[in-house]
Image 1 (tube, rainbow, N blue to C red):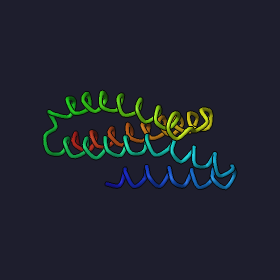
Image 2 (cartoon, rainbow, N blue to C red):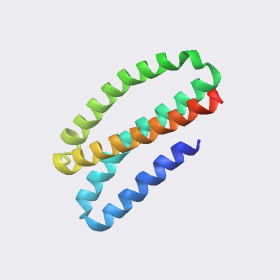
Image 3 (cartoon, helix red, strand yellow):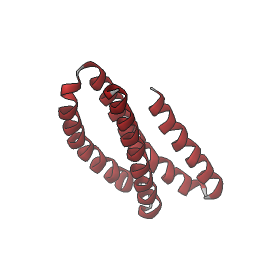
Image 4 (cartoon, helix red, strand yellow):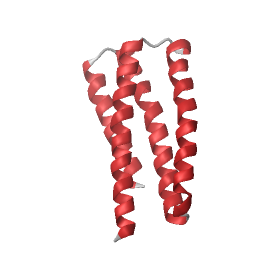
Length: 120
């Protein structure tokens, strides 16, 4: 699963660079802002690639179900990070949003590539 490795490598590398620039607390907030979107995007990619190769007709149903599951997951995740972990909203939310957008862009491009491979 090269796309998952690429998503993880880009995420961890960008976090390490940020960790060199910011203080320890902000670094931790950025890390956790990355982990939720990375876990969700990696899990979705893994399942989508597997279902597409094995039973392509079921991919749409999987993606719809994953969408609703991720809505619940992200709501609970953000609430837990802000309420339980008591992260400051600005660093965490900026990190979460940036990684969310970036990782889902990577996932969309990988899905496009996966779909184009089958159509050849």
